[in-house]
Length: 149
Length: 442
Image (cartoon, rainbow over all chains, first blue to last red):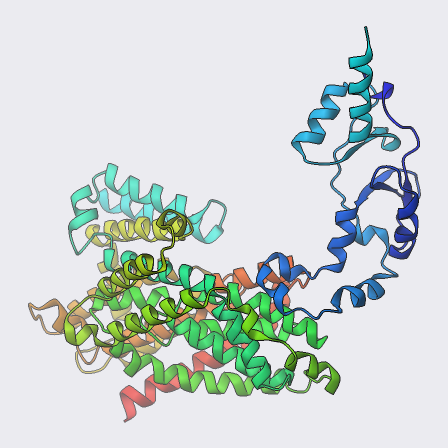
């Protein structure tokens, strides 16, 4: 079975120039907890997950010394939310992407998701995103396989 | 032939360590392996003969202190001290900077510099974030304070440990000779940073109030472990103070302290020992064997002849030798790792002493001759303070720059140099003055 047989061809997308505020407003309509970012030439530039959003709001020194959580200002999170409003998604997104092509196998997609501990894979053709394979669709595929006689 | 093979192994190893193209521990171990396989030094000489062997006093002193520091760092003490200091400074940024420099300097004198900055940099970034100011003045000043503070004691910086072990100097010898120099240099350093950063560090009253509202006691993760760590650390420092009188080597004190702390803290030794800096320890081991090889073939003696003809030391006066050693060490340590440099300089100074001083049979009488002592202090001051001269001059610099970058505050090579070079130059001039005034005028 190929990726093209199970992928969703309408992934949620944002442009590189869109802002943090834009991203947050869009969250309510997102299908698979992931948004892909494309540049002006419609080439895939990055990915945004809930974790990327939260990372912006947490000071980076906490990744070096976790114990400082105990002394942080209780309003830090809210303050950072307001400060981050105008950040572009390019500053937030993860740029190193793992992708699959439409002719790749489902087992390859499933393995990449498990090994890299990610939720979905973008399907690309010549650098453009043409679909998405999230965990949910892989699980749906399992249901179909088991239903086959 | 053997002379040239040993010299080539030494030079190639040194070149590779400086180039940083291959990991320095790998270079040191392969160099040491070649010295032994080619029988330049036998394994017996490399392991057991004092003149050429690995200096286990240095290795075990480092291991002991690494264990003590590893357990103490888990208590939250460093972070607690930093927040306490920030509150004592009433949230005034420049005063916080001064207090942080003092904490860094004192902790670096007693513990290793890398652990000190590793634990203080995140809390510094937190304070700067709370104060809504650029953390750079704090970070650069703390690195400098760490390298200056480490110069103060026998255990503060590896060059001092190496010199003390070979020359049989005590903890108190360093307290009498390098600590006063460091106090003098540190005071001048604080004045310099006031001049550079004093006006830049101003914040509004309400921002300062945020610092005063922090509860620093929440940072103490394990009060029981803290008490045990501080007790052992106190006993170890007392042991260092008295080791000369009681005729114990510093490594004995450190290893016993580490063992006691491992037992009373109930920490898992597998876990603690896994976290030690084994690459650094094996770097030392390899380096000692490489230097042992070039000492045995006579390269170091030849170099000491060069030093003699250049600086004309005599049994009565080695002023030029001391000052040349100071500046040569300072400049070299800014460019290359000060550990291989000091490892090579120690036998060089010893050979110079043997050539110039009257031929006593007792090794200690020669290496601790009153004319020679200023040269040792010059070597210690130059090698430790020179580390401030560039981003790669000392491990603490590399760690701080790495952490700053990770936290989103990159410090460029150029920016580091702009601040570091004048301060290093200042500390070197003050060291020159100290040596001249203390050993040749008064």
